[in-house]
Length: 165
Image (cartoon, rainbow, N blue to C red; front, side, top):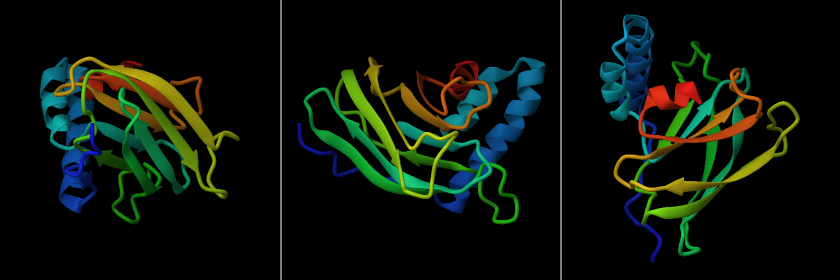
């Protein structure tokens, strides 16, 4: 299968603000048990592949996804601000759309540039399974406190599933 030519990077300020609004609603909704509302709002900002920077540092590198047919469907450089960078109105999230080509096993990898690293790690990879290309998303989280991995890979259908992983 050919490389998807239609993938796009959702990084404009409107999408960031929508994500921040979803997170804010998530905090309130999570305490009230309204995860369905949170997940539907987060779907507006999230893509097939989502990078989350939970560190205090700017991370730069490359994310690569190879589909079940051994075709590279995503190979993008990124510069991901810290998730807590309030000075620059950044949210530490980058999303990529239209990555999944078919159901099956995908290879996901991240390589951080020389000056970037998370808890001493600069590379990570995982084999992931995508069964529903219209619903499932991949979260790649850097420095997530709730995870044992410095760079973690989680597949789910909603933001709340990523938070539970």
